[in-house]
Length: 271
Image (cartoon, rainbow, N blue to C red; front, top):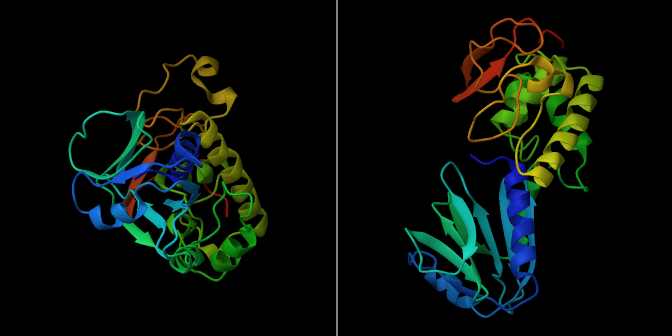
């Protein structure tokens, strides 16, 4: 599932490509045809990301004018030169030159401003957004006995954080992933949040997840660069049984709430 930085990049690409100009909207697959017909010929007033949710606000006169997209596990939104649709395209937006084609989303629906506000209200603060309030997340964390590894993946706590950022930020601050939220020190939370802001905003800029500090990088350690479809250098994510880049002990993996959690048992002992 794409993490929050990917959704912010898609919001930026939508505005950069189509912003403030009339566009054609269609549903080649047919499942979004009725809603697409209401938006066809309108312009896009705003495209914004909140965690893993993308909202495309069309300047339309009727109440339902916001397309709400959640890509889920297999969804993709592609920008490419206009051509015949390939595969099952749920939604197509085009200016006659470029097309944005949406494939396989978990959610694609047309909603009102009030429904958008209600969806956003259910989410925790998004580290990428300048209006995010980390205190909201901290109040929810400190009242919970769930592990910090579980809480960071809860979109009601930190919107946009996924499995990679969760594992990496806990490693970078030597936090035991099983530490209960109500046992986590406030100073540790403040460090985690500041690092999420840094890492995730960098992900928006460069389009990949890099979490390894220069002193642990391939050049400094004389090792090959990581090859992975997610790109970037990481400390523990998908490195099960490989040596920790800091202490050399084997990286551990265990299933937590249906997702693989990666950590270093020697480095990550801090609460």
